[in-house]
Amino acid sequence: MRRAGGFYAQLAFCALVCAFLIVPVILSVSAGLTVNFLQGVKSGLTLRWIGAVWSLYSDTISLSLLVALACLGATLLLGVPAAYVLAKRQTRWTRLAEELLVLPVAVPGLATALALILLYGGFRGFRTSWVFILVGHVLFTLPFMVRSVLAVLSSIDLKTLEEGAASLGASFAQRFFGVVLPNCRSGILAGALMVVTLSIGEFNITWMLHTPLTKTLPIGLADSYASMRLEIGSAYTIVFFLMIVPLLLLLQRFAGERR
Amino acid sequence: MRRAETPRLLLLIAPAAAVFAAFWLLPMARLAAIAGGGPLGLAAYGAVIANPRYLQSLIATILLAAAVTGATLIIAGVAGLFLARNRFPARGLLVAMLTLPLAFPGVVVGFMVIMLAGRQGLIGEIVFRLSGSRPVFAYSMAGLFLGYLYFSIPRVILTVMAAAEKLDPALEEAARSLGAGHWRVMRDVIVPGLAPALVSSGAICFATAMGAFGTAFKLATNIDVLAMTIYTEFTLNANLAMAASLSLVLGLVTWLVLALARSVAGAGVAAAA
Image (cartoon, rainbow over all chains, first blue to last red; front, side):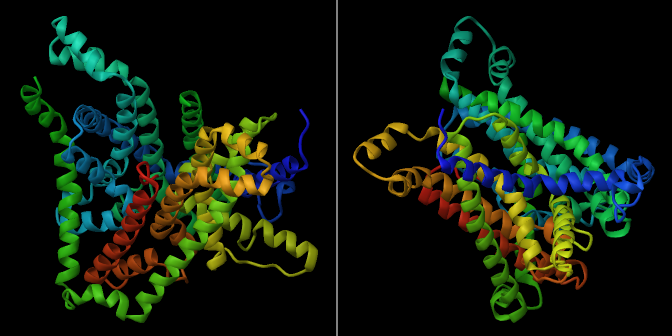
């Protein structure tokens, strides 16, 4: 195939944009693995900084995983039934519910976090536990689970499937678990990936909600950027990339398959 | 059958509704009440406009968000259109890399900007080798612009690619067969076809830039963008009423932009991550 001249100009442009996004990632990964970033790679490669991150911040990593999994559980329990209802009924009220549900994503996280602190900050036990962070994460990620499941449910003929099962004598529970859920599996899976990815990376809400004893990974990152040497911040960023990049690649593959 | 089903459906949506009401609607109502109940009363909302510092911060934030949105639409529009319409080796890799930063938190994006434009940054190093002076702009408005661009581009590229793949190639062929040149086709067929996607992703981009906190937190210690102003009022000045009314104004502006875009571009304008 003959390429027009414009093709290479546009390709070069894309490569440039790509460099803008990827070069800093490569720089920070290399900074986290070199003995002295100022002197460059010739000062030698080391895993010392990664080790330092592990001893300083391993609790933030486990807390992030805990919050992400709990958030996943909560959004599954709350979001999948809600999406089912929204798919079954399209009235003024369900549209309003859909609209409202997205607000915590549309409105800046700072406002949501501030509101949570103002109303519940007085309950010390709640305020200082990791569940307080979980609440923020659930508000922020729930719309993604609902929308992902709703998209699949709206694309299949739910009514006929359910009526068929009902005419064969299936109870509601049998229909829900045996027909509805298996049919929206792909939506649930995509939603779950999205929820975990977003929860692990959430900063805007979490920064306001965290306490010195409840720090998630991005909070620890901000902390290390501010108070540790560049190499440790970079090594910590590597750890974060190792957690989030596989999830992002899975999400990309998923989106590609569905298209 | 429908009537008998209603209680069951209500029961299924009740948990989500309860959590949402308890942890978002109620707190937000409280936030609004506190904003109106400070020493200034409802005038606290007016203070956002009347106080030059808050007004300046609001204007700077809106200008920054608008500039980022414009630049992102152009960059992501060109790149997204190209990637959707051409097939070549390594295209998949390019797309994967362009959309990778999608879920990077704001602080990490700030750190990426420091890698590029900070004191030990790459741009400074290159310019130093060439000219002997070392520009450091990570902590200025330019650095903030770069950071917002960084997290906006991947999102808009995805939307543009999806929309470009749905364009009907027959329209373009018809225009060409009628003698339209390259730019004419671009202006009269492709851009109008992409318009809804551009409006909706532009609105999301603007809203995200308005409220972006993490990147500003990392880079804008000396710049008054609204998110930082709110944070300072809350933590340093303990001015709850002001922080509350500022964040409500911020929330209202972003919500309005999204609602406006939806009425222009139709459904599908929902907030993104």
